[in-house]
Image (cartoon, rainbow over all chains, first blue to last red; front, side, top):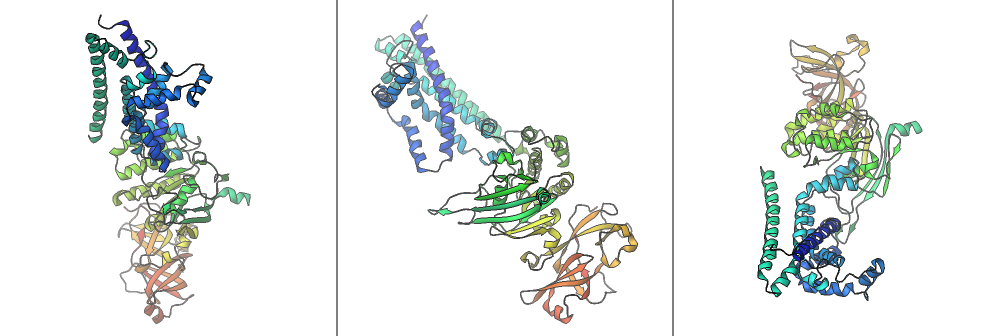
Length: 228
Length: 390
């Protein structure tokens, strides 16, 4: 047995984190990306830059500010505590909040590009045929931008799987609560247990690689279909 | 008054595009850019049956008017009543109007059948035509499994028209549906639209800047310029009014409704009468009010719309006896309008219908033409506006 129970717990936790984060990101990211793709206001550029920040900033910087925000003395952390009775720091919920912010650009940017290529005139046509907003979203926008949705979901999921710095800052290393795969890997290396570190690192590498092959293969397949 | 309201389409639409900081405040998806500070102000009534054409130069606001009617633009004033329904303040989907866009706007991820189903599944009422009927009317039976990108321009537009009809609209609005269609494919579509007008009991409003299409299809004509109504009324009346610029052009033409009187198989000709009363029989028809055209399909009594270009009509005071021209009508001058000093357009009435002749001022003075004078009209060409030629 090369994987210990603690490693399996970390894997399961990581998958849960990635899944919850991806679902939240698709729900939040789609309207945000839609607005960004359509808006011409200067405020939109500010929002666009904010969304892109996690691409540039060291994760520790994001983690640091999140930790400050999570503090019960601050507005966000205080209200969260009042509402739920729990603090966000060093909890799974805190990791979800951090991951949503950290992976936001990986979901919003592909969606935004997809929406920019979407022919908005089709929506007017559907409107004249009596299709309401949700009807148009589910029957026109999603099917016609499904590649963007697939890319956004896969990138958001994969990127959350590999998160390290933010988790370290706001989640610490609590097995079963905040100890994700990358943290467990770090622990093994610290303990010089290279054998188990190989298993985790190799697993993450293969997983990410397969995911990206699937993604690009899917997009290329669609591309050749369209040309042919 | 109430009866009148139910029968007509009433439009009061005012809309303005204000320029702000050098940037157009509102942008219209019309393809043609609107002038800065463009404003639209239209008040008119349209018949609740048949085809109404809205004609005017590019950028005069035809498309904007149509978009205001369907609700895709929010004008400052919007009082629209169609068949007794006040729809001016309603959101697009509650107006229950069909709209055919200049660029077909078919949904690319759905097959032709899927596009039709999209509309049919969301239809406004069950009173509209069935899928089978619409597919038959527009001749798209063989295309149902194809994707839009596998269709020609003409086929796409026919599918787009079919799709709009399947929502069972109160009125069908068409925004230059032939603009993106190559000239060969236009004729069949015009034929389909002609047939639709007969099969449908809803009015159609057809925007175009092509007079040929309009004279062939429309019963009622609205002319617009720079966002304002120039004139509106029955097509045949408007196309014979000499005070309108549209009738004083080199290529202006009168449009007449004629009926088939008889076919001459020996010479391959069909005889048309300008008089509409066939109850009188042949005896009641003056041979001075008949036109010969190439052999047509169609039965005795069928209505055929023809177009007579004003430059192909010449005037004589006596009936020419030795002439190769077959079509010689007898009429009375009802109006004369001088154009650019050297030419005149003479309007003559023949059995209640008007024919325009474009002649030189010199000839006009030489023949002493004036209102009330009886003249013979020699007509060189008669263009058929119905697809009934053999």
